[in-house]
Image (cartoon, rainbow over all chains, first blue to last red):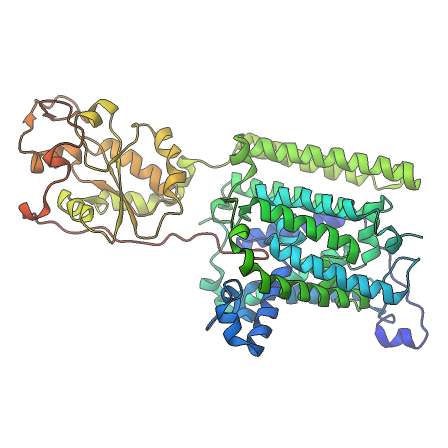
Length: 186
Length: 407
């Protein structure tokens, strides 16, 4: 198997040669099967932002344990004897990174790159990545779940709140799309 | 027993952790194959340049949905034990909107940014950093508006419950809407980007047909009801019933009535006339049909764990029907009043006149008037009676859905 495009080789000047992505319907159905297996085996769906929440709560406790114990929200995650890193949602997040990496190797897509629209500089892209990330992190916790848990899992399990989330999510993205057109288009 | 499985019980914590890593790996691989590690591919959806995001997301939703409810229909999976995201309507809508805005500004979401970072996309790594900051800000500020954040709470509200239509119909409708939207997406893709739908694999029609077929099967079989749930637990519970482990002595019920550490709920499943004539104080009248008992199940779920439910009828027949319905629907701390209301009155009802016993479930006593609970026997003084009995009530905690997803 060729894994040439991985980080260092790119710096040596080897052009990355990623494989094209398979048919989206096929990938979607495969993702649906993974989601079904998660529900069938564990009784819960998929998730991602919860992993970062737990890791962060763990980190915050290292720095300010008293503060975490007295914050009505954080105490749930890392208060007292809680061990946020042992939560299964963190295992799920670790798995996502491993699975993404392995899949990327097969697709020859593991190489350093700043993915961006053609009209902006790498620095602008990174700045907006951070800004967007902040909004997404905040919004995901506010909504009690991100596109993985509310969007995919909750919708498939027919939660009313999750369908409301989906509509709000698409509404938010479409509402802002005219203003950030330059980020993604010529 | 049907899925989901008790993972920590069988595999231990480490084994469970590994299972979650494996599932996560499947999730990450699927997202990577979809191209969702690349922000440009996701953002392109919102300028109608690439429909992969929409297609992947909704294919996944309808595939998982028909499989979950198919497995539930044939009894392989107990949907009641599956964690379904609870509905906090307004916080979800506001959070979802903010997330949507951030999604198009940053080009990724939490899951896809982890995948992007795993394939060394620098922008995805910065995005993960941003998400962490957002999580930090949320954690520090949510105590200020905790009340709002906990408002508009509807619990485990599902579309079939909300709409009042069968699950199978909802499943089929969502599948059909999704297929219609796929067709629309391909039309737009053709018009805007000149993509030729004929070049897309023919197999997708077969896949769509397969999913519609599965949805029709789900609709035809229907979701399990009280009978099916009873069948699952019948082996254990019929034995308890036959051994008379669930029929509690009137003396025990009297003790429970005076025990303020127990949340006692008495369900009187007799015809309304009998109930009006005499009933125990604080007993709740439920018409003596299974549908009526099923109708009050939502009131009995999610009560404090120290809740004990005692069903009673004139004898034990109707109470046993109610008890089976309760147990099948996972109201597990349910009991039956031994000998029923007739036995109760024969012990505590000093002023009641017996009448000849002609048929089962008849009231065996006559009162001077329809006294309801204004009878001494409705709430007897426990100290006035010296009753000997074997206590049977044991409080158990039902296994419920574990927290899942981003919780």
